[in-house]
Amino acid sequence: MKARDILKNNKLLTLFLSTFRLSACTFGGGFVIIPLMRSLFVQKLHWIEDEEMLDMTAIAQSSPGAIAVNASILVGYNVAGFPGALMTVLGTILPPLIIISVISVFYQAFRDNPYVSIVMSGMLCGVAAVILDVVIDMTAGILKRRKVLYVLMLIGAFVAVRGFGVSIILVLLVCGLLGVLDAKRTGKEKA
Image (cartoon, rainbow, N blue to C red; front, side, top):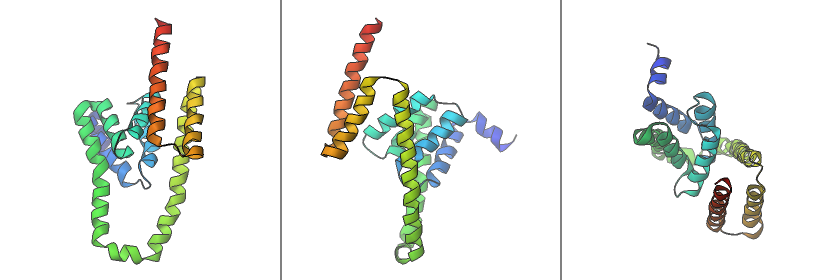
């Protein structure tokens, strides 16, 4: 049996190895790993629907903790229950743990190396591009729903945070409340 067949037949192993690989090759925080998870679990493996991934991203972002870890837990749980969540969280946290451990041993050499500084500065451009891609994908998902309320919430949240310095926590609470009220309202209309 080929290695690829073993991975297809064992979701837990696939979840662990996939998140391990994504986490090991991703620099720039959780927003960078989200489009990669979407590409793998939604578009390639077809284990999650696009709408579900959008919802999981929103939940992961609004939950306390690292967004990459939160998203991996949600994806793993959605695909394979508690064991899936355990495998994905291990796959997500082990690479940074290993990398940081190695870097800490050689910290002085890394800190003073101008080439490392240049590489890290260059990576910021790539991280910014990936985060912009996530914003565009999430906005496109909201615009596809063609609900005026969601578009107004998107614009209002951006203006409140960037224009007026309103706390993100307050914006999340207000948007969550509006979402609940809208769900109740649309639920009554369907009944």
